[in-house]
Amino acid sequence: MTAEIARATRVVVRVPAKVNLELRVGPLRDDGFHDLATTFHAVDIFDEVTVTPDAEFSVSVTGVGEDKVPTDETNLAYRAAALLAERFDVEERCAIRIVKAIPVAGGMAGGSADAAATLVACDTLWGLGLRRHELEEIAAELGSDVPFALTGGTALGTGRGEQIVPVLATGTFEWLFALTHEGLSTPSVYAECDRLREGEDVPEPQPSDGLLASLRSGDVHGVALAMHNDLESAALSLMPSLRPLMEMGLEMGALCALVSGSGPTVAFLLKDRQDAVALRRVLEAGGLADDFVHASSTPHGAQVLVVD
Ligand code: C5P
Image (cartoon, rainbow, N blue to C red; front, side, top):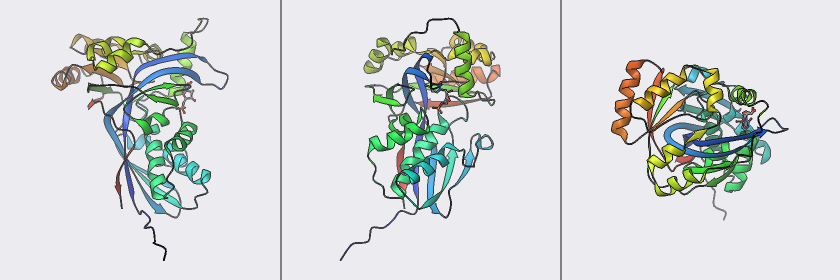
């Protein structure tokens, strides 16, 4: 007698946002991408993705920034499910429901996170049992930040950001993120970076030893000192209003203020939650950002929460 394996009818996956503690950008490559040396760091702002069997693929989005996310086949989560089905000859289809907390077009890899969560959810729903490296390969096809969203925690990204190696990091850091409703498109920020560096001899990107050593020892002051983003001047050039926000944050006790990824979200690193709450009050009164979110570092990546 063969035992029937019960198929899942609903899978829920939670996936974190990221901030780049360091983002070193090399010269423009022939394929239109840039080589990176970046240290990704996951923070506990989570999107939740639920997949259920359905006759066709579909996407629905609720939560923060829901009106700014496409729900057709251009949605990265839709593409993730379709690519996985195609690659593994899966005939089943699913409805994808996304509940967003990660800012949209904010430089925190929200779309990439949803794609990573969808890969993990569909792998479980369809009983594929894929290995980590198989998921990572498909993730890399979908976007440069998608493999990190699978892994979470703290990791070094090289290549165009898709080659991930976990980094030993101790300690939990406190963050305040200042959000701007108007997003910045990643390609336009990279293009602005190229424009600003025209004529310069851009070296191959290297991660800094200082950041990795500070992460190992959990030294928040060392991390604050070593944080760096080569895309920051491009983001500031496209959105100059970020500069007074960052300056005010530094004056008011932030250990570091850095544009997150391609922006426009600004990440403030604080000594503790109390300082983060105090900074939020001051910045809110200053009216220099549209919204604020507190977050702490998280070791998690895309994680299955529920299988029914
Ligand atoms: O890989 P992803 O789809 O997230 O990249 C979006 C865009 O960001 C690319 O089309 C490219 O313009 C830019 N990019 C880049 N170099 C990278 C990653 C992204 O130039 N390493």
